[in-house]
Image 1 (cartoon, rainbow over the protein chains, first blue to last red):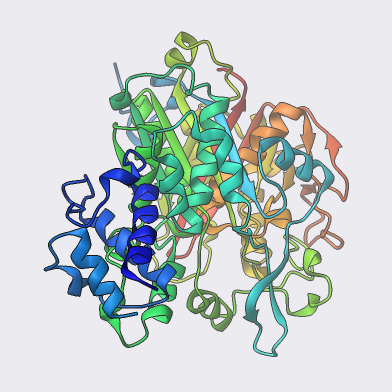
Image 2 (image 1 turned 30 degrees about the vertical axis):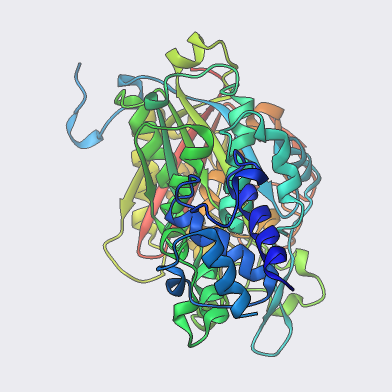
Length: 79
Length: 434
């Protein structure tokens, strides 16, 4: 699976949790926080994405990541 | 206004009348008020086997389990009436919260609160019970094992009973007073009493009372087995016959899962909104025995029923029907019948008596609310639901329900709920408006 596919999965999870978002708004440079995701939403998005990718990483390790692109890269590294 | 009159406590008629304008229920045997009413009339039990749990001899544990499948679909029809994210909140919630939301939504609709309602600050929310969903903690422990850092952060929110308050208040847009009211197996009645007080005191105009489904883990059920409180060992092949309140072959309680909701409303508010009044909460009382064990106390039960009658301002002879606590526990059943005899003495030959637990199992925190719903359905529908498992009554003095539904015209019903820790409660419900 490549990074674009990971991003697509994450997009679908984000829209599920934040139905006001459109797919176009969600790109590598955007931050989940700026798109309106609160801290619990952000954990839910990452957790739901990991479930689909069938990986388990402690959520605290995502704390320092700045934007969606860095989250996607980190998930991809751990596939 | 005189509100305190010494030893008699408070009289309901001195306060704003408290009516019931909506009901909802979800049980193992039936989903929705109409289906539940039919299941009561038919004496249909929801008791089968609990998945994955066993008696010490390895036989599957008997109980009434509510299946989670299909709940999301059932909720869809209510989503349009609720907050925008109600659907997602429902989806990410545990089974007990889901069941609460469904029962709540049905009652909300019946009370026409989806059409017109007081301001959000005038609506209260009371959730019955404490330690409602230990299965949530058990499942998290099983999933994380020794790697606790994998625990989902949401756990910090949803292990608490008050999570139900948060989710339901968000779904229904409730902003008045809210709390969980714990009273072990008496929680449901305790919650009805607390909600009634909120309305009587004018703190809210409408109060949603939720009897939540108890989502127990194997630990709690094993605890009940080990303390000797759980029944059903002689009924491996006939689970529906395992819960037999007041029958000589009663062996202990049988766990049941259900959620129920009552919408309580000040009579003035119900009239202003022009909604049908289903019943009136005419009285009720709660009292402690002053002991910490599981044994029932005749004195405590008598005191509580007598106090409930006083709060309703009625004589024992006015009660037509008793929805007993009746858990199918030998000591509990005998004690309650003795208490009823002491309070109702010469009236026993006309007071009809049954226990809804015969059909639903013991719904723990929800029991009082489920049984209030069952009482109101019988008052409204002019029937007495059967006790199919009552073959050899332990008393010849009491006028029990029979194996088939009977026509009956009741005006006043009394419903008892008792909890471990010496917690006694009785509520009195009157048919229709006061």
